[in-house]
Each structure stands twice: as structure tokens, then as C-alpha cells.
Image (cartoon, rainbow, N blue to C red; front, side, top):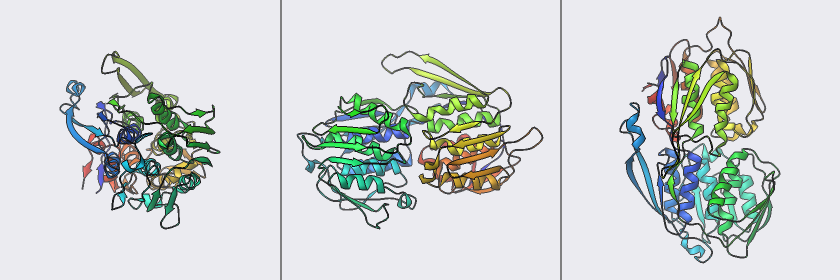
Length: 460
């Protein structure tokens, strides 16, 4: 499916979809827990549904129910929007419950396009004693899990890539025997996978993890916040280079709403700067551990006006915040270290095209191992639209516009089946010299269903 975006001003009030990272972690914890969990306002996207399917395949009972966010009625762009809630009856896996609780489905578990689901579920499956196979789409079959598989093997687990390249299809078979392993983490998801599963290993089993390389540290902080909420004991140091986790624990059921997604909020927030705005965003919490909330500090550095307002106190429903983003003048380039936040590279590259001077996105070589090689892809597609872009091994340099030029021209570009590339290009089109057509635009639904419709994209 192709999307055609005509340049126009983007403004309004929008509720940000729930966080994919939080949604998938909550689903997996609830699936392994003893009891029934109520997950309110989760992300309802292709990736989230892949996680639901994986949890069901492992033995959890999950039902979904429609609900209406009462805050939506106050905002004309959102009136009547239906959100989905999940009721999860967990497997009841833990210290006294035995690995037979984990099902081994007859067919491979299909994680679709969701790398987060794949990596986290691989470690969860290692808690069982029967072989479980995982597979996914074309992109998943190119995303290596080799460091994670090597670490699982070191913990006594069968962890086999059927093609021998570290990618899906992958067979996992426990039991989890523990030990000490080294796990370099070009993606934090490898470490999060072990951290979430290791506490459920049998009592007396100890898992020690040396982490010689860790990118995306804020996502580890997010994972640890879930262990803290479950009163799971672990030992680590300030650099997160060593962990020690004892088995014998179990997860309790958990309830509550899923926070909004800063990774998704980056797109409408940036659209306000390119097209004029202002844009008001709801559903975000400035105190959430998500690393991608750094986008709004980056926008301020480029010259944006970013204003947080608390519009409801804590109470039983928790605090409610309103975030307004607007442009107060010409955007300015700068240097941005994206080691903690590589998912921001596509949209920051677009912003660099609309900023005066040079914008350098650095220390983000791991952006090459996402759904696509996002460094190469963004350099290519922005170049086709007339941007002055230099590809570097660990990032991109964009030489921005001056007051006498139009930053990007009209044209057709490939979305490469990557949701963040598609959404970044859609935002870029808002300020282009003419309409921009994006191929493979349906992939935006992986994390932000309805985003292209917000931009009044024509779909064909």
C-alpha cells in the first residue's frame, strides 16, 4: 500500500498510543504470572498482537475487550476512540509450579515483525523443558539473535538457529540450568530477555551475566522497574555491566494502564515543527523511564517550544499530563548522541533536513540492526528527496537548508517495510515542495495504527 502526503500544516490535540515496550513487557509478565491481570489501554498494533499470539501459544489465556478512554471525549480529534484492554490469565509459572506449565505448541510461534516479542519470548520459552520453535516475517529472519542464543546455550539451554545464522527460525528447549555468561548487547532486548526470565528459573539456580557492551540503557532501566515492582531481587552495578539473579521467584498478577509511547510521540511532535503546529499530545508521563522521551529535549535544543502541564492530579487513575510542542523560530542543527535512543534516528534525520546548519546523529551504529539498516536507508531515501546527507558508520550528517531553499522536493520513495522509516518520511512530506508518495506504508501500523490518517494521507 502506498501513502500520498501533500504538504500542509499539522495541528491539533492527539492522544499518543500506548508504549510498545511497556505493552510487550506487561503481556509477557502477565502471561507468566499466577492469577489474572488487567492491562488497560495497551498498544493495539501489529507488534502488540504478535506478542498476544505468542503468549497464548505458550499457554496464557488472553481475552480482549473494547473500552473508551474518558479523556478522549474532551478532544474533538479523539472523540469516541475505542481502545483495547486485555485480561490475562497467567500460566502460573514459578518456584513451585514446574516447567510443564509452559506449553510447547505443535506449530512455530509466529512473532510477525516484532523483534521485541521474539527476543523476550525466546528466554521465556527456555524456562520449559520441551522444544519450542519461533519464526517471523522476512525482516525477523534477517535480525540476528546470535548473542542471546549463545548466552542461553551457556545457561544449559538448547538454543538453535535452524539456518545456522543466528536468525529465525529458532528452536529453544530448557530447562534453565544457570551459570555465568557474557552477553554483549548491541540491542538491549537481549539483556531484558534474560532479566525477565532468570528469576523464574528453579530455586537454587543462579544466573550471572557479564555485559561487555550495552546500548539503549534506558530500556534496561524500564525492565528493572518491572522487577522492582514485583519485588524480585537482583544484584547489579552502576554501569549495568554485571548482574546476578537467583531463581525460585514467581510473578504476581498486575493491573493498570499502559503509559503512552514516547517513540511514537516523536512523530506528531516533530510534525509540529516542520509544518508549523502547534500540536498537543496526551497520554505521556515525563517521569516514565522510556529513553525516547529524550526526543523533546532534542527538539528544544533545535529551537522548539516544549511545554508540560499537569491537567489532573494522581488520584486513582494516576496523573494526566498535556504536552504542547510548537516552533518559535528557525530550527537549528546540532550534534545528537543517539546511543540510548537509536529509534529516534529516522525522525531526527528528517528534522535535520529542515534545520539550519549541520545536524550530526552519532554513536548509533546499532540503528543498522533494527527492522532495516536505518542509517543506510534514511541516507538513501532523504537523498532521493534532495537532502544533502552523509552516511557515516555510526550515524548520519545532514547539511540543512538555508533561508533561500526548499528542504525537500516532491517524489516517490520506498518505505522499506520499516514503520519508523515510513512515519519519518510522512512527517518529512509535510514541508516538502510538493506531494511525496511512500511505498509499503502499511508498515506504520506496526506501532502507530492510524498515524497516516492523522496526516490526511491518501492511501492507494
